[in-house]
Amino acid sequence: MNPGNSSYDVVVVGGGHNALVSAAYLARAGLSVVVLERLGHTGGAAVSIEPFAGQPARLSRYSYLVSLMPEQLMADLDLDVRLASRTTASYTPWTRGDRTGGLLVERPEGEATRASFRELTGGDEEYAAWQEFYAEVGRLAEVVAPTLMQPLPLERDVRALVEQRIWADVVEQPLGRAIVDRFADDTVRGVVATDALIGTFASMDDPSLVQNRCFLYHLIGNATGEWRVPLGGMGAVTDALAKAAVEAGAEIVTGAGVSAITPGPDGAEVTWHDGSQERSVTGRRVLSGVAPWVLRILLGEGEDPDTKPAGSQLKINFLLDRLPALRSGEDPAVAFAGTLHLAEDYARLEQAYAAAAAGRVPDPLPGEVYCHSLTDPSILGDRAGSAHTLTYFGLHTPAGIFDADPGARDLAVQRALASIDAVLAEPLADCLATDADGRPCIEAKIPQDVEQDLAMPGGHIFHGDLEWPWAPNRARLDTPAQQWGVQTWHDAVLLCGSGARRGGAVSGLGGHNAAQAVLAEL
Image 1 (tube, helix red, strand yellow):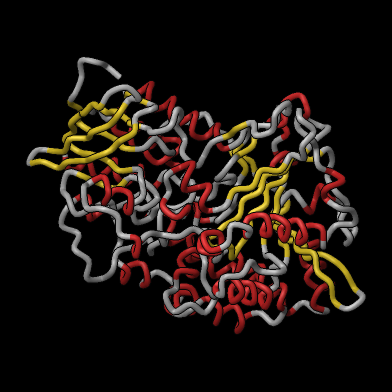
Image 2 (cartoon, rainbow, N blue to C red):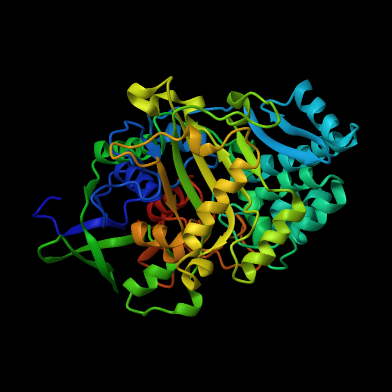
């Protein structure tokens, strides 16, 4: 940071990927920008690390796939980032009496997908229902996706362009109704439902429709909903964003813990500590990349435990000496390349929700696994070709379970391993690599770890429940901040993180939209 500069056009609080997107856009437009990040590095949840001593593998520690980041945003900022498609969309092992198999969904879908549905269900009706449903979802995505980098549309204007049936299924009624009405097979129902539950603790029949909003966000990215692998790991994405911001003229200060934001008549003052002394800087606008709940504290409004978000996920990173064999006989290079669903039949998902809502770690624990290194072996360094990563993401593991029971963490990890082993022909433990000290290469993160590491309240990976990516029909859209969905209760302070409307996931949308609002205002 320029020691002689205490005033900027824009001060960005937090250095996550959205904050870096804002900084890059604004600096490119000629504004003076400084980014203040509490940690010793930028990237927030989108970072790569070497978690296992003596092993060169660089794993995506928290966020691990990219869906929502618009290709237009990447082009605007000239990002040197490559995203690779996975040939397998998903694979779901199943057991029916004495029969075992796996439901394979290819990308793009082909005859093997049709045959896989037929083997599971005994006919072609379920696959026809699948194709019809996702074709309708695709047309919904084609309407919504282009609006994400534009001022907020009104709900009625979006609805006018969407088929009534899919609008009712996804927007107006609990998603569980549509899933049960449209699909007959419990495994197929579960595969559809999982996109509604990533980082979201809810029943499929929840009247709040939080599960519906989660589902929509997971399926509208670039109008395809495809989840792609960042080559080089998630850190490659945020490294490219930081480079774009700095090359455009933005200043980035790490080790800068912000303690207060004080709005004034012509902007706001930001107070922060550099490890040795308290400092302050002013900005005509302040962009908040932290969660809205944290922002209220920085603005002096105090903590409100009753409104604190709560995350719901168990993330486990593994390093393996080899991929394990599956009981179904499917090639591990196919099954693990996409999303491998575990204990995620529809009935099991609802049973797991009920158990977690009652304060218990679900058994079996639903979750999903994928292997980054099958698509991108570069993250393994000199172990490429002789090792593999696995990423496990557990559902229905809300923060409250771990607050109430200190032993719940170990139990959840044990049950995650049990869910994995249930579909394998050999124990996963037999395939685990060991670190320099001889310990198995396993790293587990619960919501409390996310909060401690990243200051995300309650470990909620979206900074709070997702909102619809459009404005209510009666919304006030008088200011640029309101028009872009980034307003707060202070004119000089805007949201640029996942807590903005249309935030959530690794998208950069919160950062882009905040930057557009600032440019319109200044």
